[in-house]
Length: 110
Image 1 (cartoon, rainbow, N blue to C red):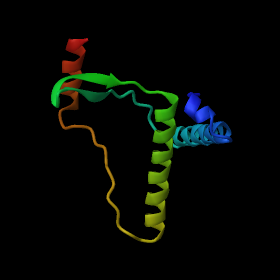
Image 2: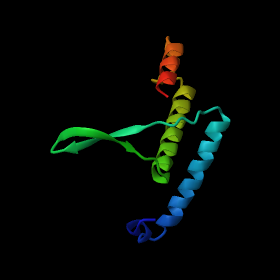
Image 3: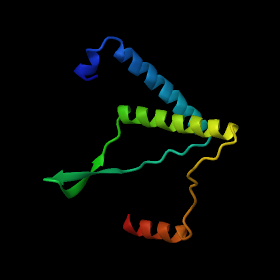
């Protein structure tokens, strides 16, 4: 744990508790059919305000903890709106029309 965090009384215990809850949320999502996708998150590399490249943003426990709680909050919000009969915007993921062709092209690059 970074020193500034360790210096705050009780923060380490709070982070551990949050991590435990996030792990339980993740297990439940997988039990309900969630997929585990490995994604690459690029971050622009700037020099004097100009993009000169991209670097890969690495996952770590802190990022994963935040993601798990964000996903949980989105699910709770969606279920709440649904029980109240309120409309909401949701993302529906469909396979592209030419998925077979995309797979073939990807195999050629490997």
